[in-house]
Length: 600
Image 1 (cartoon, rainbow, N blue to C red):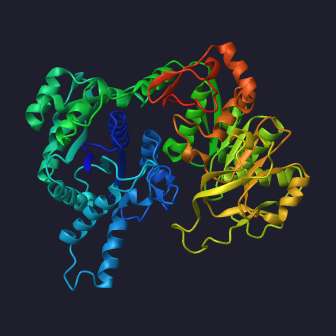
Image 2: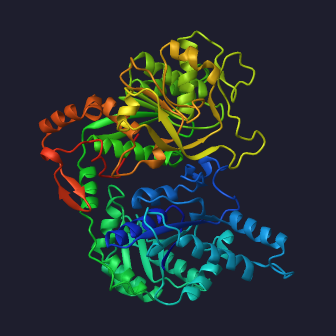
Image 3: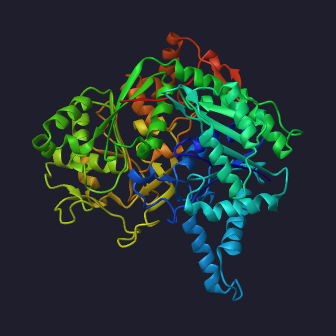
Protein backbone atom coordinates (compact mmCIF):
# COMPACT_ATOMS: atom_id res chain seq x y z
CA UNK A 1 0.00 0.00 0.00
CA UNK A 2 1.20 3.48 -0.92
CA UNK A 3 0.14 6.55 1.05
CA UNK A 4 -0.25 10.20 -0.01
CA UNK A 5 -0.71 12.61 2.91
CA UNK A 6 -2.19 16.05 2.20
CA UNK A 7 -1.65 18.76 4.83
CA UNK A 8 -2.43 22.45 4.85
CA UNK A 9 -0.66 25.56 6.04
CA UNK A 10 -1.04 29.33 6.58
CA UNK A 11 -4.86 29.49 6.56
CA UNK A 12 -7.80 27.12 6.50
CA UNK A 13 -10.13 26.81 3.52
CA UNK A 14 -7.34 26.53 0.94
CA UNK A 15 -8.94 23.53 -0.75
CA UNK A 16 -7.08 20.58 0.77
CA UNK A 17 -10.13 18.39 0.15
CA UNK A 18 -10.33 19.30 -3.52
CA UNK A 19 -6.55 18.87 -3.85
CA UNK A 20 -6.67 15.43 -2.22
CA UNK A 21 -9.61 14.43 -4.43
CA UNK A 22 -7.86 15.72 -7.54
CA UNK A 23 -4.71 13.76 -6.74
CA UNK A 24 -6.91 10.70 -6.40
CA UNK A 25 -8.56 11.39 -9.76
CA UNK A 26 -5.17 11.80 -11.44
CA UNK A 27 -3.81 8.55 -10.01
CA UNK A 28 -7.03 6.73 -10.88
CA UNK A 29 -6.74 8.07 -14.45
CA UNK A 30 -3.29 6.45 -14.53
CA UNK A 31 -4.85 3.05 -13.88
CA UNK A 32 -4.39 2.86 -10.10
CA UNK A 33 -7.06 1.98 -7.57
CA UNK A 34 -7.49 4.73 -4.98
CA UNK A 35 -9.10 5.03 -1.55
CA UNK A 36 -9.31 8.01 0.82
CA UNK A 37 -9.20 8.82 4.53
CA UNK A 38 -10.10 12.14 6.15
CA UNK A 39 -8.65 13.00 9.58
CA UNK A 40 -10.61 15.59 11.59
CA UNK A 41 -8.82 16.59 14.81
CA UNK A 42 -11.95 17.74 16.65
CA UNK A 43 -13.14 15.87 19.76
CA UNK A 44 -16.57 15.02 18.35
CA UNK A 45 -17.00 11.33 17.63
CA UNK A 46 -18.49 12.25 14.26
CA UNK A 47 -20.00 15.24 12.47
CA UNK A 48 -23.58 14.23 13.24
CA UNK A 49 -24.30 16.76 16.00
CA UNK A 50 -22.34 19.68 14.55
CA UNK A 51 -24.15 22.78 13.30
CA UNK A 52 -23.97 23.38 9.53
CA UNK A 53 -22.96 26.96 10.38
CA UNK A 54 -19.94 25.55 12.22
CA UNK A 55 -18.78 22.88 9.83
CA UNK A 56 -20.88 22.81 6.69
CA UNK A 57 -23.14 19.92 5.78
CA UNK A 58 -23.10 16.51 7.40
CA UNK A 59 -22.45 13.95 4.67
CA UNK A 60 -24.10 10.54 5.11
CA UNK A 61 -22.54 7.30 3.87
CA UNK A 62 -24.15 4.00 2.87
CA UNK A 63 -23.37 2.47 6.27
CA UNK A 64 -25.03 5.38 8.08
CA UNK A 65 -21.82 7.16 9.00
CA UNK A 66 -22.27 10.92 9.55
CA UNK A 67 -19.02 12.39 8.32
CA UNK A 68 -17.19 15.49 7.13
CA UNK A 69 -18.29 16.99 3.82
CA UNK A 70 -14.87 16.29 2.31
CA UNK A 71 -15.80 12.61 2.14
CA UNK A 72 -18.58 13.71 -0.18
CA UNK A 73 -15.95 15.30 -2.41
CA UNK A 74 -13.97 12.04 -2.41
CA UNK A 75 -17.02 9.98 -3.34
CA UNK A 76 -18.07 12.35 -6.13
CA UNK A 77 -14.59 12.78 -7.61
CA UNK A 78 -13.52 9.14 -7.39
CA UNK A 79 -16.95 7.46 -7.72
CA UNK A 80 -16.35 5.30 -4.66
CA UNK A 81 -18.37 4.32 -1.56
CA UNK A 82 -16.58 5.03 1.69
CA UNK A 83 -17.32 3.78 5.21
CA UNK A 84 -17.68 5.60 8.51
CA UNK A 85 -14.17 4.42 9.44
CA UNK A 86 -12.73 6.43 6.53
CA UNK A 87 -13.36 9.50 8.71
CA UNK A 88 -11.02 9.54 11.71
CA UNK A 89 -11.67 11.98 14.55
CA UNK A 90 -9.94 12.63 17.86
CA UNK A 91 -13.17 11.54 19.54
CA UNK A 92 -13.10 8.15 17.81
CA UNK A 93 -9.45 7.57 18.63
CA UNK A 94 -9.76 8.47 22.31
CA UNK A 95 -12.97 6.45 22.61
CA UNK A 96 -11.13 3.46 21.12
CA UNK A 97 -8.10 3.86 23.40
CA UNK A 98 -10.17 4.33 26.56
CA UNK A 99 -12.30 1.27 25.71
CA UNK A 100 -9.12 -0.80 25.39
CA UNK A 101 -7.82 0.57 28.68
CA UNK A 102 -11.09 -0.36 30.44
CA UNK A 103 -10.81 -3.90 29.07
CA UNK A 104 -7.27 -4.18 30.38
CA UNK A 105 -5.67 -4.49 26.96
CA UNK A 106 -2.74 -2.31 28.02
CA UNK A 107 -1.80 -4.72 30.82
CA UNK A 108 -1.64 -2.10 33.56
CA UNK A 109 0.63 0.30 31.69
CA UNK A 110 0.28 4.07 31.97
CA UNK A 111 -1.78 5.03 28.91
CA UNK A 112 -0.18 7.98 27.13
CA UNK A 113 -0.48 9.94 23.89
CA UNK A 114 2.81 8.37 22.80
CA UNK A 115 2.77 5.47 22.13
CA UNK A 116 -0.83 4.41 22.77
CA UNK A 117 -2.79 7.15 20.99
CA UNK A 118 -0.30 7.48 18.15
CA UNK A 119 -0.22 3.70 17.67
CA UNK A 120 -4.02 3.62 17.57
CA UNK A 121 -4.01 6.25 14.83
CA UNK A 122 -1.49 4.32 12.74
CA UNK A 123 -3.30 1.02 13.23
CA UNK A 124 -6.60 2.65 12.21
CA UNK A 125 -5.08 4.02 9.00
CA UNK A 126 -3.56 0.68 8.03
CA UNK A 127 -6.81 -1.19 8.78
CA UNK A 128 -9.08 1.16 6.82
CA UNK A 129 -6.72 1.65 3.87
CA UNK A 130 -7.15 -1.97 2.74
CA UNK A 131 -10.99 -1.89 2.76
CA UNK A 132 -12.21 -2.00 -0.88
CA UNK A 133 -14.33 1.06 -1.75
CA UNK A 134 -14.61 0.81 -5.54
CA UNK A 135 -16.67 -2.37 -5.83
CA UNK A 136 -13.66 -4.54 -6.66
CA UNK A 137 -12.01 -7.17 -4.52
CA UNK A 138 -8.73 -6.60 -2.70
CA UNK A 139 -7.10 -3.44 -1.38
CA UNK A 140 -6.47 -0.28 -3.38
CA UNK A 141 -3.04 0.69 -4.68
CA UNK A 142 -2.92 4.15 -3.09
CA UNK A 143 -4.57 5.67 -0.03
CA UNK A 144 -4.91 9.48 -0.06
CA UNK A 145 -5.06 10.87 3.50
CA UNK A 146 -6.18 14.42 4.24
CA UNK A 147 -5.26 15.94 7.59
CA UNK A 148 -7.89 18.53 8.49
CA UNK A 149 -7.04 21.91 9.98
CA UNK A 150 -3.82 23.85 9.65
CA UNK A 151 -0.28 22.96 10.67
CA UNK A 152 0.27 24.32 14.17
CA UNK A 153 -3.25 23.67 15.47
CA UNK A 154 -2.95 22.27 18.99
CA UNK A 155 -5.62 19.62 18.52
CA UNK A 156 -3.81 18.05 15.56
CA UNK A 157 -0.53 17.47 17.46
CA UNK A 158 -1.15 13.74 18.18
CA UNK A 159 -1.96 13.13 14.51
CA UNK A 160 1.14 14.97 13.31
CA UNK A 161 3.28 12.84 15.62
CA UNK A 162 1.50 9.66 14.56
CA UNK A 163 1.91 10.46 10.85
CA UNK A 164 5.60 11.21 11.37
CA UNK A 165 6.00 7.78 12.96
CA UNK A 166 3.83 6.27 10.22
CA UNK A 167 6.16 7.50 7.49
CA UNK A 168 8.93 5.47 9.12
CA UNK A 169 6.65 2.48 9.73
CA UNK A 170 5.75 2.10 6.04
CA UNK A 171 9.27 2.99 4.89
CA UNK A 172 10.78 5.04 2.03
CA UNK A 173 8.99 4.79 -1.28
CA UNK A 174 5.60 4.21 0.35
CA UNK A 175 4.81 7.66 1.78
CA UNK A 176 4.43 10.99 -0.02
CA UNK A 177 3.62 14.25 1.77
CA UNK A 178 1.88 16.98 -0.23
CA UNK A 179 1.72 20.30 1.61
CA UNK A 180 -0.92 22.78 0.41
CA UNK A 181 0.04 26.35 1.23
CA UNK A 182 -0.88 29.91 0.33
CA UNK A 183 1.18 32.26 -1.81
CA UNK A 184 -0.70 35.54 -1.45
CA UNK A 185 -0.44 38.56 -3.70
CA UNK A 186 -0.44 41.93 -1.96
CA UNK A 187 -2.46 44.45 -3.93
CA UNK A 188 -0.16 47.26 -2.88
CA UNK A 189 2.90 45.80 -4.59
CA UNK A 190 1.33 43.13 -6.84
CA UNK A 191 4.02 40.62 -5.86
CA UNK A 192 3.61 36.97 -4.94
CA UNK A 193 4.89 36.54 -1.38
CA UNK A 194 6.60 33.30 -0.36
CA UNK A 195 7.21 34.03 3.33
CA UNK A 196 3.92 32.48 4.61
CA UNK A 197 4.74 29.20 2.85
CA UNK A 198 8.32 29.30 4.10
CA UNK A 199 7.12 29.61 7.69
CA UNK A 200 4.49 26.92 7.19
CA UNK A 201 7.08 24.45 5.88
CA UNK A 202 9.43 25.41 8.72
CA UNK A 203 6.67 24.62 11.23
CA UNK A 204 5.94 21.33 9.51
CA UNK A 205 9.61 20.32 9.63
CA UNK A 206 9.77 21.30 13.30
CA UNK A 207 6.96 18.81 13.98
CA UNK A 208 8.85 15.97 12.31
CA UNK A 209 7.35 15.92 8.82
CA UNK A 210 9.18 16.87 5.63
CA UNK A 211 7.10 17.78 2.55
CA UNK A 212 7.91 16.00 -0.68
CA UNK A 213 5.66 18.22 -2.79
CA UNK A 214 4.37 21.78 -2.44
CA UNK A 215 0.94 22.60 -3.87
CA UNK A 216 0.75 26.38 -3.81
CA UNK A 217 -2.61 28.15 -3.89
CA UNK A 218 -2.58 31.52 -5.55
CA UNK A 219 -4.75 33.77 -7.69
CA UNK A 220 -2.53 33.12 -10.71
CA UNK A 221 0.26 30.76 -11.77
CA UNK A 222 3.48 31.06 -9.78
CA UNK A 223 6.22 33.05 -11.48
CA UNK A 224 9.49 31.21 -12.13
CA UNK A 225 11.49 33.30 -9.68
CA UNK A 226 8.89 32.63 -6.98
CA UNK A 227 9.13 28.87 -7.52
CA UNK A 228 12.92 29.10 -7.40
CA UNK A 229 12.73 30.97 -4.11
CA UNK A 230 10.39 28.40 -2.62
CA UNK A 231 12.63 25.57 -3.78
CA UNK A 232 15.66 27.22 -2.18
CA UNK A 233 14.12 28.06 1.18
CA UNK A 234 11.79 25.07 1.57
CA UNK A 235 14.30 22.45 0.35
CA UNK A 236 11.88 21.06 -2.23
CA UNK A 237 13.02 20.40 -5.83
CA UNK A 238 11.76 22.93 -8.35
CA UNK A 239 9.82 20.33 -10.37
CA UNK A 240 8.06 19.21 -7.16
CA UNK A 241 6.37 22.60 -6.70
CA UNK A 242 2.94 22.95 -8.30
CA UNK A 243 0.60 25.90 -8.73
CA UNK A 244 -3.09 25.53 -7.97
CA UNK A 245 -4.35 28.90 -9.13
CA UNK A 246 -7.95 30.08 -9.26
CA UNK A 247 -9.96 28.40 -12.03
CA UNK A 248 -13.54 28.80 -13.35
CA UNK A 249 -14.59 25.43 -11.92
CA UNK A 250 -12.91 22.79 -9.80
CA UNK A 251 -12.92 20.19 -12.58
CA UNK A 252 -9.86 22.02 -13.87
CA UNK A 253 -7.79 21.06 -10.81
CA UNK A 254 -6.93 17.47 -11.91
CA UNK A 255 -6.05 18.92 -15.31
CA UNK A 256 -3.74 21.50 -13.70
CA UNK A 257 -1.97 18.73 -11.83
CA UNK A 258 -1.68 16.63 -14.97
CA UNK A 259 -0.27 19.55 -17.00
CA UNK A 260 2.41 20.05 -14.35
CA UNK A 261 3.32 16.32 -14.40
CA UNK A 262 2.19 15.77 -10.80
CA UNK A 263 1.51 12.09 -11.53
CA UNK A 264 5.12 11.56 -12.59
CA UNK A 265 6.46 13.28 -9.49
CA UNK A 266 4.20 11.27 -7.17
CA UNK A 267 5.19 8.06 -8.98
CA UNK A 268 8.87 8.87 -8.37
CA UNK A 269 8.32 9.42 -4.66
CA UNK A 270 6.22 6.25 -4.33
CA UNK A 271 8.19 4.08 -6.79
CA UNK A 272 5.12 3.59 -9.01
CA UNK A 273 6.71 4.35 -12.36
CA UNK A 274 6.64 0.71 -13.50
CA UNK A 275 2.84 0.36 -13.15
CA UNK A 276 1.75 3.91 -13.97
CA UNK A 277 -0.07 4.51 -17.25
CA UNK A 278 -0.45 7.80 -19.08
CA UNK A 279 -3.43 9.55 -17.45
CA UNK A 280 -6.67 9.32 -19.42
CA UNK A 281 -8.63 12.49 -18.63
CA UNK A 282 -10.59 13.10 -21.82
CA UNK A 283 -13.87 12.97 -19.94
CA UNK A 284 -12.63 15.44 -17.34
CA UNK A 285 -11.44 17.84 -20.01
CA UNK A 286 -14.85 17.73 -21.68
CA UNK A 287 -16.59 18.37 -18.37
CA UNK A 288 -14.47 21.39 -17.60
CA UNK A 289 -14.84 22.86 -21.09
CA UNK A 290 -18.58 22.25 -21.27
CA UNK A 291 -19.04 23.80 -17.84
CA UNK A 292 -17.21 26.93 -18.92
CA UNK A 293 -19.39 27.30 -22.01
CA UNK A 294 -22.90 26.91 -20.59
CA UNK A 295 -24.90 30.11 -21.04
CA UNK A 296 -28.64 29.36 -21.00
CA UNK A 297 -29.64 29.75 -17.34
CA UNK A 298 -31.95 27.67 -15.19
CA UNK A 299 -32.87 29.50 -11.98
CA UNK A 300 -33.56 27.44 -8.84
CA UNK A 301 -34.63 28.82 -5.45
CA UNK A 302 -33.14 26.98 -2.48
CA UNK A 303 -35.45 27.79 0.42
CA UNK A 304 -33.65 26.88 3.61
CA UNK A 305 -32.52 27.68 7.10
CA UNK A 306 -28.77 27.90 6.50
CA UNK A 307 -28.72 29.98 3.32
CA UNK A 308 -25.95 32.20 4.71
CA UNK A 309 -23.42 29.37 4.22
CA UNK A 310 -23.48 27.48 0.93
CA UNK A 311 -21.38 24.64 2.37
CA UNK A 312 -24.39 23.76 4.55
CA UNK A 313 -26.05 22.50 1.35
CA UNK A 314 -22.93 21.43 -0.56
CA UNK A 315 -24.22 18.07 -1.81
CA UNK A 316 -27.53 19.68 -2.82
CA UNK A 317 -25.62 22.25 -4.88
CA UNK A 318 -23.50 19.58 -6.53
CA UNK A 319 -26.56 17.47 -7.34
CA UNK A 320 -28.29 20.51 -8.86
CA UNK A 321 -25.15 21.18 -10.85
CA UNK A 322 -24.84 17.62 -12.16
CA UNK A 323 -28.45 17.74 -13.31
CA UNK A 324 -28.14 21.21 -14.85
CA UNK A 325 -25.16 20.19 -16.94
CA UNK A 326 -27.00 17.05 -18.02
CA UNK A 327 -29.66 19.38 -19.44
CA UNK A 328 -26.99 21.69 -20.90
CA UNK A 329 -28.05 24.62 -18.73
CA UNK A 330 -26.11 27.06 -16.56
CA UNK A 331 -27.20 26.72 -12.94
CA UNK A 332 -28.21 29.90 -11.13
CA UNK A 333 -29.09 29.45 -7.45
CA UNK A 334 -31.19 32.03 -5.64
CA UNK A 335 -30.80 31.65 -1.89
CA UNK A 336 -34.09 32.34 -0.12
CA UNK A 337 -33.98 32.45 3.70
CA UNK A 338 -37.12 30.56 4.72
CA UNK A 339 -37.85 32.82 7.68
CA UNK A 340 -37.93 35.87 5.37
CA UNK A 341 -41.03 34.46 3.66
CA UNK A 342 -43.05 34.46 6.89
CA UNK A 343 -45.67 37.02 7.95
CA UNK A 344 -43.66 37.99 11.03
CA UNK A 345 -40.82 39.17 8.79
CA UNK A 346 -43.27 41.32 6.81
CA UNK A 347 -43.92 43.27 10.01
CA UNK A 348 -40.38 43.29 11.42
CA UNK A 349 -38.34 43.65 8.22
CA UNK A 350 -40.56 44.42 5.21
CA UNK A 351 -37.59 44.91 2.87
CA UNK A 352 -36.26 41.40 3.56
CA UNK A 353 -39.79 40.01 3.14
CA UNK A 354 -40.28 41.70 -0.23
CA UNK A 355 -36.81 40.64 -1.43
CA UNK A 356 -37.41 37.00 -0.49
CA UNK A 357 -40.76 36.82 -2.26
CA UNK A 358 -39.37 38.62 -5.30
CA UNK A 359 -36.65 35.98 -5.58
CA UNK A 360 -39.11 33.12 -5.12
CA UNK A 361 -41.47 34.46 -7.76
CA UNK A 362 -38.68 34.87 -10.30
CA UNK A 363 -37.35 31.30 -10.37
CA UNK A 364 -37.90 28.35 -12.67
CA UNK A 365 -38.00 25.77 -9.88
CA UNK A 366 -38.11 25.49 -6.08
CA UNK A 367 -36.09 23.19 -3.85
CA UNK A 368 -36.61 22.84 -0.08
CA UNK A 369 -33.71 20.85 1.42
CA UNK A 370 -33.52 18.96 4.70
CA UNK A 371 -33.03 20.54 8.09
CA UNK A 372 -33.82 20.40 11.78
CA UNK A 373 -35.60 22.73 14.18
CA UNK A 374 -38.66 24.95 13.76
CA UNK A 375 -36.98 28.16 12.58
CA UNK A 376 -38.17 28.97 9.07
CA UNK A 377 -40.59 26.02 8.85
CA UNK A 378 -43.62 28.21 8.15
CA UNK A 379 -41.66 29.94 5.39
CA UNK A 380 -40.86 26.59 3.80
CA UNK A 381 -44.55 25.67 3.97
CA UNK A 382 -45.40 28.93 2.19
CA UNK A 383 -42.81 28.15 -0.51
CA UNK A 384 -44.35 24.71 -1.07
CA UNK A 385 -47.83 26.28 -1.24
CA UNK A 386 -46.64 28.83 -3.82
CA UNK A 387 -45.04 26.10 -5.97
CA UNK A 388 -48.11 23.85 -5.73
CA UNK A 389 -50.67 26.53 -6.54
CA UNK A 390 -48.65 28.14 -9.34
CA UNK A 391 -47.50 24.89 -10.99
CA UNK A 392 -43.82 25.66 -10.34
CA UNK A 393 -41.55 22.57 -10.36
CA UNK A 394 -40.86 21.58 -6.74
CA UNK A 395 -38.55 19.12 -5.01
CA UNK A 396 -38.65 18.63 -1.25
CA UNK A 397 -35.95 16.63 0.49
CA UNK A 398 -36.46 15.06 3.93
CA UNK A 399 -37.94 17.98 5.91
CA UNK A 400 -38.81 19.49 2.52
CA UNK A 401 -41.08 16.52 1.83
CA UNK A 402 -42.60 16.73 5.31
CA UNK A 403 -43.53 20.40 4.99
CA UNK A 404 -45.11 19.64 1.60
CA UNK A 405 -47.36 17.07 3.30
CA UNK A 406 -48.24 19.56 6.05
CA UNK A 407 -49.08 22.25 3.49
CA UNK A 408 -51.27 19.84 1.52
CA UNK A 409 -53.15 18.81 4.68
CA UNK A 410 -53.73 22.44 5.65
CA UNK A 411 -54.73 23.76 2.24
CA UNK A 412 -56.50 20.80 0.61
CA UNK A 413 -57.88 18.87 3.59
CA UNK A 414 -58.54 22.14 5.47
CA UNK A 415 -56.79 20.80 8.57
CA UNK A 416 -55.50 24.20 9.62
CA UNK A 417 -53.83 22.80 12.75
CA UNK A 418 -51.90 20.17 10.75
CA UNK A 419 -48.26 20.06 11.78
CA UNK A 420 -45.32 17.89 12.76
CA UNK A 421 -44.97 16.72 16.35
CA UNK A 422 -41.37 17.90 16.05
CA UNK A 423 -42.61 21.49 15.99
CA UNK A 424 -45.98 21.24 17.76
CA UNK A 425 -46.25 18.11 19.93
CA UNK A 426 -49.86 18.88 20.93
CA UNK A 427 -51.19 19.33 17.37
CA UNK A 428 -54.62 17.80 16.77
CA UNK A 429 -53.65 16.68 13.27
CA UNK A 430 -50.11 15.22 13.41
CA UNK A 431 -49.11 14.73 9.76
CA UNK A 432 -45.51 14.01 10.74
CA UNK A 433 -44.67 11.91 13.78
CA UNK A 434 -41.61 10.71 15.66
CA UNK A 435 -40.29 7.45 14.21
CA UNK A 436 -40.30 4.56 16.69
CA UNK A 437 -36.73 3.32 16.20
CA UNK A 438 -35.05 6.62 17.20
CA UNK A 439 -34.08 8.08 20.57
CA UNK A 440 -35.65 11.15 22.14
CA UNK A 441 -32.79 11.71 24.59
CA UNK A 442 -29.60 11.11 22.57
CA UNK A 443 -28.79 13.14 19.46
CA UNK A 444 -25.75 11.43 17.90
CA UNK A 445 -26.21 8.45 15.60
CA UNK A 446 -29.82 7.77 16.67
CA UNK A 447 -31.68 8.69 13.49
CA UNK A 448 -32.73 6.50 10.60
CA UNK A 449 -29.38 6.58 8.85
CA UNK A 450 -27.72 5.17 5.78
CA UNK A 451 -28.83 3.40 2.63
CA UNK A 452 -32.34 1.92 2.75
CA UNK A 453 -34.62 0.46 0.08
CA UNK A 454 -37.64 2.36 -1.20
CA UNK A 455 -40.18 0.31 -3.18
CA UNK A 456 -42.29 1.90 -5.91
CA UNK A 457 -45.99 1.12 -5.61
CA UNK A 458 -47.18 3.62 -8.25
CA UNK A 459 -45.54 2.36 -11.42
CA UNK A 460 -46.56 5.20 -13.74
CA UNK A 461 -45.35 7.92 -11.38
CA UNK A 462 -42.79 10.48 -12.51
CA UNK A 463 -40.34 9.36 -9.83
CA UNK A 464 -40.53 5.71 -10.93
CA UNK A 465 -39.90 6.74 -14.54
CA UNK A 466 -36.97 8.93 -13.49
CA UNK A 467 -35.41 5.93 -11.76
CA UNK A 468 -35.79 3.83 -14.90
CA UNK A 469 -38.93 1.97 -13.77
CA UNK A 470 -37.02 -0.05 -11.18
CA UNK A 471 -38.91 -1.95 -8.51
CA UNK A 472 -36.93 -0.25 -5.77
CA UNK A 473 -34.03 2.14 -5.20
CA UNK A 474 -31.35 2.38 -2.51
CA UNK A 475 -30.96 5.90 -1.17
CA UNK A 476 -29.42 7.38 1.97
CA UNK A 477 -31.54 8.57 4.89
CA UNK A 478 -31.01 10.95 7.81
CA UNK A 479 -34.14 11.77 9.80
CA UNK A 480 -36.16 11.13 12.96
CA UNK A 481 -39.69 12.03 11.86
CA UNK A 482 -41.93 10.51 9.18
CA UNK A 483 -45.36 10.84 7.61
CA UNK A 484 -48.04 9.60 10.00
CA UNK A 485 -49.32 6.27 8.54
CA UNK A 486 -52.75 6.97 10.06
CA UNK A 487 -53.20 9.99 7.76
CA UNK A 488 -52.02 8.39 4.53
CA UNK A 489 -55.44 7.22 3.37
CA UNK A 490 -57.02 10.67 3.84
CA UNK A 491 -54.14 12.35 2.01
CA UNK A 492 -54.34 9.87 -0.87
CA UNK A 493 -58.09 10.37 -1.29
CA UNK A 494 -57.46 14.13 -1.53
CA UNK A 495 -55.00 13.60 -4.40
CA UNK A 496 -51.56 13.20 -2.81
CA UNK A 497 -49.80 10.12 -4.17
CA UNK A 498 -47.32 8.12 -2.10
CA UNK A 499 -45.28 6.74 -4.97
CA UNK A 500 -42.76 4.77 -2.89
CA UNK A 501 -42.70 3.21 0.56
CA UNK A 502 -40.29 1.12 2.61
CA UNK A 503 -40.44 -2.68 2.69
CA UNK A 504 -43.06 -2.64 5.46
CA UNK A 505 -45.34 -0.24 3.61
CA UNK A 506 -45.59 1.93 6.72
CA UNK A 507 -42.87 4.47 5.98
CA UNK A 508 -43.61 6.92 3.17
CA UNK A 509 -40.54 7.50 0.98
CA UNK A 510 -41.73 9.54 -2.04
CA UNK A 511 -44.76 11.80 -2.52
CA UNK A 512 -46.09 13.22 -5.78
CA UNK A 513 -48.92 15.36 -7.08
CA UNK A 514 -49.98 13.60 -10.30
CA UNK A 515 -51.80 16.66 -11.67
CA UNK A 516 -48.80 18.97 -11.19
CA UNK A 517 -46.03 19.43 -13.79
CA UNK A 518 -43.45 18.35 -11.21
CA UNK A 519 -44.15 18.23 -7.48
CA UNK A 520 -42.11 15.54 -5.71
CA UNK A 521 -40.89 15.03 -2.16
CA UNK A 522 -38.42 12.41 -0.94
CA UNK A 523 -37.92 11.34 2.67
CA UNK A 524 -34.38 10.24 1.75
CA UNK A 525 -31.46 12.41 0.57
CA UNK A 526 -30.89 11.72 -3.14
CA UNK A 527 -28.11 14.32 -3.29
CA UNK A 528 -25.65 12.07 -1.46
CA UNK A 529 -25.45 9.59 -4.35
CA UNK A 530 -25.38 12.10 -7.20
CA UNK A 531 -22.23 11.92 -9.33
CA UNK A 532 -20.83 14.17 -12.06
CA UNK A 533 -21.26 11.34 -14.55
CA UNK A 534 -24.63 10.22 -13.21
CA UNK A 535 -26.93 12.92 -11.86
CA UNK A 536 -29.51 12.02 -9.23
CA UNK A 537 -32.77 11.14 -11.05
CA UNK A 538 -34.94 13.38 -8.84
CA UNK A 539 -32.62 16.37 -9.31
CA UNK A 540 -32.52 15.66 -13.03
CA UNK A 541 -36.31 15.70 -13.05
CA UNK A 542 -36.44 19.02 -11.20
CA UNK A 543 -34.03 20.72 -13.58
CA UNK A 544 -35.63 19.22 -16.69
CA UNK A 545 -39.08 20.32 -15.51
CA UNK A 546 -37.74 23.79 -14.70
CA UNK A 547 -36.42 24.02 -18.27
CA UNK A 548 -39.66 22.72 -19.78
CA UNK A 549 -37.85 19.56 -20.91
CA UNK A 550 -39.20 16.90 -18.54
CA UNK A 551 -40.55 14.78 -21.40
CA UNK A 552 -37.02 14.44 -22.79
CA UNK A 553 -36.05 12.68 -19.57
CA UNK A 554 -39.23 10.68 -18.91
CA UNK A 555 -39.78 9.47 -22.47
CA UNK A 556 -36.77 8.13 -24.43
CA UNK A 557 -38.51 8.73 -27.79
CA UNK A 558 -39.08 12.38 -26.92
CA UNK A 559 -35.54 12.63 -25.63
CA UNK A 560 -34.14 11.34 -28.91
CA UNK A 561 -36.28 13.76 -30.90
CA UNK A 562 -35.09 16.61 -28.68
CA UNK A 563 -31.46 15.64 -29.17
CA UNK A 564 -31.89 15.33 -32.92
CA UNK A 565 -32.95 18.97 -33.01
CA UNK A 566 -29.95 19.94 -30.92
CA UNK A 567 -27.42 17.80 -32.77
CA UNK A 568 -25.68 14.58 -31.68
CA UNK A 569 -23.78 14.57 -28.42
CA UNK A 570 -20.60 12.71 -27.51
CA UNK A 571 -20.59 10.15 -24.74
CA UNK A 572 -17.28 9.37 -23.03
CA UNK A 573 -16.55 5.80 -22.01
CA UNK A 574 -13.34 5.40 -20.01
CA UNK A 575 -12.12 8.69 -21.43
CA UNK A 576 -12.85 7.72 -25.06
CA UNK A 577 -15.49 9.61 -27.05
CA UNK A 578 -18.29 7.30 -28.19
CA UNK A 579 -21.64 7.73 -29.90
CA UNK A 580 -24.76 6.32 -28.32
CA UNK A 581 -27.18 4.42 -30.59
CA UNK A 582 -28.20 6.47 -33.63
CA UNK A 583 -25.59 9.06 -32.65
CA UNK A 584 -27.76 10.24 -29.78
CA UNK A 585 -27.12 10.66 -26.06
CA UNK A 586 -29.86 9.72 -23.59
CA UNK A 587 -29.72 12.48 -20.97
CA UNK A 588 -30.81 10.06 -18.25
CA UNK A 589 -27.46 8.29 -18.48
CA UNK A 590 -25.01 10.62 -20.20
CA UNK A 591 -25.50 13.34 -17.65
CA UNK A 592 -22.48 14.86 -16.05
CA UNK A 593 -19.74 17.12 -17.27
CA UNK A 594 -18.71 19.88 -14.93
CA UNK A 595 -18.48 21.32 -11.48
CA UNK A 596 -18.85 25.07 -11.92
CA UNK A 597 -21.53 27.09 -10.23
CA UNK A 598 -22.98 30.57 -10.32
CA UNK A 599 -24.98 31.70 -7.30
CA UNK A 600 -26.66 34.89 -6.21
